[in-house]
Length: 166
Image 1 (cartoon, one colour):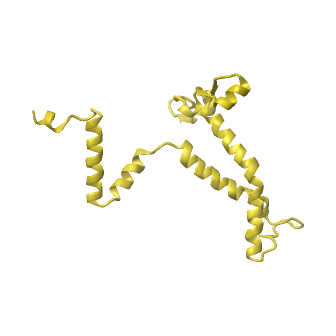
Image 2: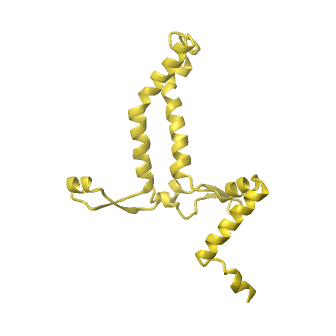
């Protein structure tokens, strides 16, 4: 489905044409890439590389975690209830356990998905970095500035001080 922009781009309303439009350059997450297989899989499949969308790899990781660790969310919630000597979290639906018991595995999975997305999918946000830098003490800001300036000068992105004076 990632070949259709409708599934990978945000839908925006165009006031001029009075229509919704889908127009963007898909993120790297939705572009085919070549991956080299580990030697164990290479000997098993006979392939040296495989072409996948990066989101497929993330989907495999998330679904594997959900299928393996999902039931443990129920055990966790059950242990939590026992620690507080609670039989059910609620009795909203007569004859059933509480609403919270219906979603007990979701607590663990939601936490994992949030950490996974923040760690592996969402890229660094420059505005957040600037915001955090501005919250530092002035001598810490100067230290970071000087370190960054030295790094950029070393990589030839900034002219050296001698070149500027000449």
